Image (cartoon, rainbow, N blue to C red; front, side, top):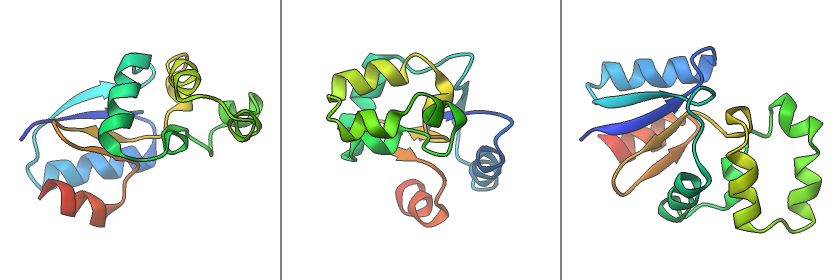
Length: 119
């Protein structure tokens, strides 16, 4: 089963996640989140597949998130569509790594969740 692995190569969590995929023999297509940022359409589809709140797609620990005051915007009631459009403007706003399969989307690296979903 091949998956799409969306990462920022300098991110230590992404490096751990990639090593985990490699060590478990999971085939993936690697995608640099800044050079090839997800589109609003991709984010909308991934959000639907994930079943998670759209807030989970934001990199809440990133400088850009704080600079733009996104938490306040989310709390004020941004629509999902507005979130997708905002996330699509800058890969650094998107939580990473992301693993996207035919019927799954994993956000961030939590080894137990990845084992359950991918092994």
